Length: 395
Image (cartoon, rainbow, N blue to C red; front, top):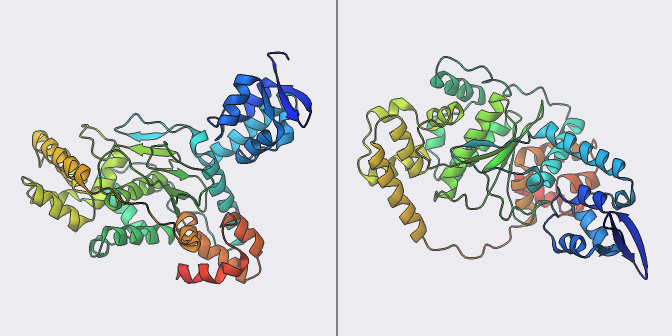
């Protein structure tokens, strides 16, 4: 066996394939750390069923492994080009050096792109999105940018603040985004085409001229923030990025006290925590910080950082508040194992209420088949017989 080849074991036979093709197709995919792939590289051989399994998981037609290197390279280039139509390769970062590799989110990007294509094909009511590019040219002040986006989305701060919980406030913001053809997908473990274990990022924005997607990541972001309040800030940050025409994975440290976080970050601060309301507020005690966080539906850490940036809180006091908040967060009881959500609720959360509702309407009007809906929108996690249950969950 040559070092340039790798043997595929098919029953009692062995078929040599180009090692470079095997690496080209799988090294930059979601299976690059899986045992069958690593063992094949180490041993120079792989059983055919394992090869097929890896190919299926990486969404690669397995006959490609038997193709010449030039053919494999062309296919990888085509796949990358398709991904980059929706998401730029570079991570948009704020106060962090965390980078997201496209292969870590590749299958999710591809699935969101498919759903965008489905929506444009089967929903004739869609128009060119009016939010994209709204903030591409900065106005004279951050406040003007913030107010322009609030007005365009129809966000009423008073309504958001009157929400009973931060989770309810987050859902209200999602409703305003989706009403303007910005689709929102939230991470749901077990109901996505890719597991995000070990991938630390806030989310991503996916390009489309009519229905851009915001993907909101879940999990622990390592900055000791209660999840719902952090998600509200993240959601607004990605809405600002859509308005700026930025489509990329997004990673930020929500409790960083770095002096310059960037204009996008400041616009979000002005939307959720207007400067005028901070001028007369007091932040000397942590309880005052927490109280204002509850009022504005953000995290206490966000209040402390915003007050520091506006010169309303000394950096030493802000750091003291952040340290105490971290201690409190660490002391919280660890949540027990979560029960698996009902499939219809998980689909509503991951695909997004707006996308699912629009495509169900297309099904009812016979513009889209039930089979195609279940395949693309639901990843075949429910059958056509359960579509009425999904409709009920979307009400």
